[in-house]
Image (cartoon, protein in one colour):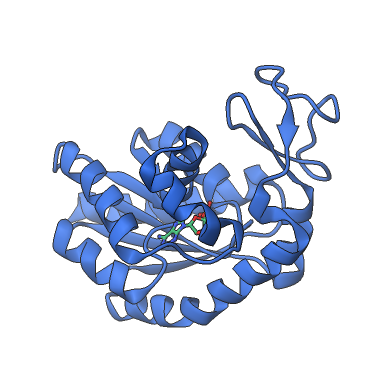
Length: 219
Ligand code: AMP
C-alpha cells in the first residue's frame, strides 16, 4: 500500500507518518527531511536548495522527483511506503504514478485550520541531535531546551520563523485544491480531522487505514 500524507505544514504529517510506520511496518519517506539532510551536510544539492527552502518556497520538481524515485526503486516493489511531503503539486503526482503505476493507494489529507497551523509552527521545536519533534505547548519536552530522547539541543526550524511560515501556508493553499481534486478523481482521497492530540488523530487515521485493509481482504 502507498500512503500519501497531504495536509498543510504543521498538520502532523511527520509525527503521524512515524506512528503509521511503526504500527503498520511500512517505511516512510519525507522529502522535507531528505532535503534538510542535504542542506545540513552541505552537499552540492544542499547548497542549491538552501535559499528557496529558507524562503518557504518549493524546490524544483526535478530534484524531489529524483529523490523519491531513488527511494522507491530501491525498495521491493510489493512493499508499501508512506510519502510525507510528496507530491506537493499535480506534476509531482503524475510523475509518482509513472514511477510506480497502479499501486494500491490512500491519499490521507490531515486537515487543520490556518489558525492552528500558525499556532503549531510557532511552538514547534526540533532536536538538533536526533530530529525528534516537540511542541512547546502541546507536546512539550520535560526541559525547555533539551530533547527528552537524546538530550540534544532543541532548535526552531529556519522555515518555522514567523515571516516564512506565512509564505509556506500561501504556497500550500495555492496548490492544495488541485492536488486534492486529483486524488478525489482517483477515488483514493480520504479526509481526516487533524485537530486534537497526537493519539486522537492517530486513532482516526488507523480507522481509515484498517477499513481500507479489511476491504482488500474481502476482495
Ligand atoms: P516539509 O518538511 O515537508 O514542510 O518541507 C520543507 C521544505 O522542503 C518545503 O517548504 C520545501 O521548500 C521543500 N520541499 C519538501 N517537499 C517538497 C516537494 N515535494 N516539492 C518541493 N519542495 C519540497
